[in-house]
Amino acid sequence: MFGLFPRDVAFFDLFESGASVLQRIAQAYTDLVHHRDRQQEFLAVIRQLEHEGDEVARKTLLKVDTTFITPFDREDIHTLVLQVDDVVDAIDAAAKRIVLFKIMETNGWLTKQAEILVRACTLLARAIKNLRNIRRPEAIREDLIQIHGLESIGDDNNHAALVELFDGSTDPITVMKLKEVLDLTEMAIDGCEDIAITVERIILKGS
Image (cartoon, rainbow, N blue to C red; front, side):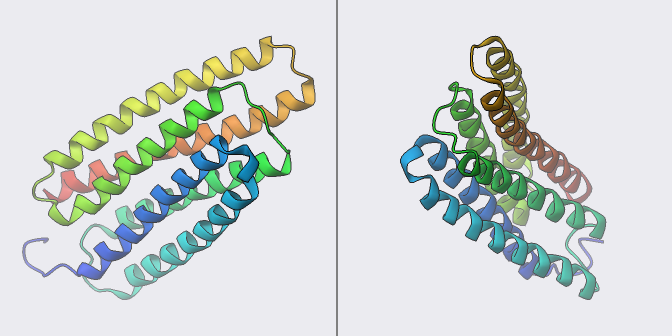
């Protein structure tokens, strides 16, 4: 099928726009975690990117519904768009809670997890951009392998973070606040692996 009909390149522009939002919001989240005195500034950036991501998702899903021939299976496109949106939403939720809960100090693990997240999102952005060259999937697969490895590190980090958090002397309210932020950050990292699995399925079908 892919060889019989021309591909609509506008889809790839939309995919890349969504991936760009993903990468930029992850970077803004990492900046927020690192620069606690500028939390409101970076939260404003994150909120704007979340709105931008919603608009890209809306346009992409509308195009799927109004285009006769799509570059990949419609179901895979829907899944990819919604998974990217889920990660963006998780990052947005984590950032809002950091500011709402007035979290100025962490146990160090949140910084590590934010860095894992931005690395995974950067790799995803590159992999999604390379979907234009789906018949040469080697570079995409290399990035996907790295994302799976980062998700595994993220799992280990989250476990260690929670052990340290509950074993420490921090008051229970602060523990609950930090746990919620850590859980949302871990959810975003897990979501990156879900996206990687969808991208792998797309290239298996199209390469």
